Image (cartoon, rainbow, N blue to C red; front, side):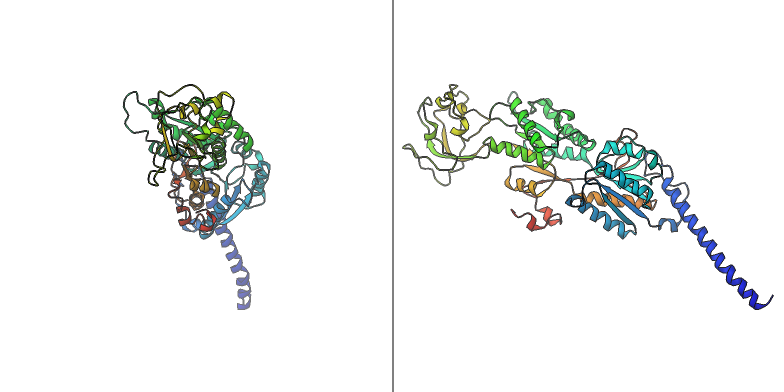
Length: 493
């Protein structure tokens, strides 16, 4: 054979051989990747390893992650999460495709279908619009070939298709809230026998009940139950089960009516719980508004000494200032030094008069008479003829607790109408989710926080959890220091 013919044959054979080797290599990678993703794991999912070591070149294979959010793209919370996920996944060499459901479960199902048929994704992360129905969606035949699914923030129920769950450690957050309540109300303080100063508490949570909300409530009750048992803490409504405290409405007006009904059914007129737990800033606003409308935000200022006068027939307007803050004149005014002003509190005798004021008999609204401590009746407030009422005092404002750090919530902390809240940094949650996704796609060991707590009704879901932090008027500035807010956004600060 001539040299020319040999060269021509080589020209055909060599490329064919190279193409064959390339195809074989590609097949090996695809098969290995598929095997790594679809391999069964132990009951403690995430801790198990593939039976054979994964070749180095497979560990470096990059892919695409599909992300389903329940909101729209303008939601600041999810934009933060999307940004963190995109940053970490991109740095690791993966693509991220995000879809927003705008609160529509049918739209989210259609987006899942796109991931199944049109988008070539290797892993799906989902924060479901409806956690229960999404499990039913995964069971449909058309989604039988879906890539692995990881639930995010809300536990997808009643499906065995779920690989992992990423959320905040809600039970631990409940423990933190309970500890803060105990500390602020000195419930651990030793008391004399038969001298129990009980604190009242009510819980208002958004409904319908959710899986993570139950963990939060259980955590709180685990921390508070010893004080219910000793009588240091009481719930006059008796609503201390999770189902009872969840107000099954998303309408603010309806929630406000339910809140008002609860208080009026179980508390005397003018009374308010010492402690109010709410699960969102919307509910916290309802509680604050109710207290304000009930007169709890008003201040009284008087420079009157009541001494030797009979309460019967005494015109309250001669004693207490009006709600505009102008001190009413009186011949019995006494001079109070600037040092004393604001330092004294109303002293009351337990043997106070029980006869109502003449103004009360005539049907006058007591709130038009005095804006003082409405956890007590007007009769009790004015009962002691020897009482000295001086200085500037504010009525007993309840300890309102909430979740979240919206600007409105921080404003309420700043105003001290809310005692404290819980900061769940969604950036940290997104980072945990991104780390899990990268580890899963690279077939690396996954650090699971909890194997036994999260049951979706079909199986226990291996879970990665993140901590949270208590925020109050003294430390909310850390939200600027850690970059969560710009200083100008907290304009009241």
